[in-house]
Length: 126
Image 1: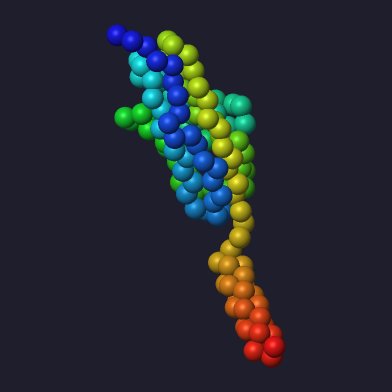
Image 2: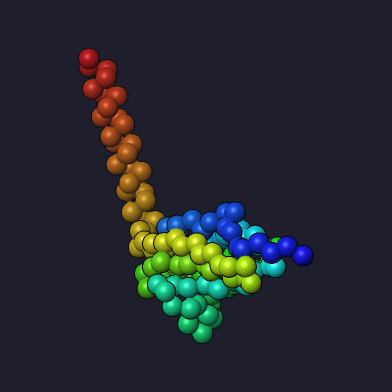
């Protein structure tokens, strides 16, 4: 049986999440034998005890970490490390939690509409 060091065929992608919403990191890893996967936040091993509510799974080469309701305290650098007898690989991404509210979104949309209206008026006068 041949061995192959772990490689990430789909690395982690950084996530921007609204406070209170869910944030999910996913990575696809290959290797032979099947690698063991560990998660880290800012260099510290992640576990359900370290981050209550976190859901971690690894099946068919897909490593998934979900935080059901993020807060600003969850922001940071998340890494997944895959290890087997042939070697190891790590993929890292950032979680940014924003405090933007629904009202802020509405104001932004309104500002954009006003700007478009102003541009149309300028174009009409030229």
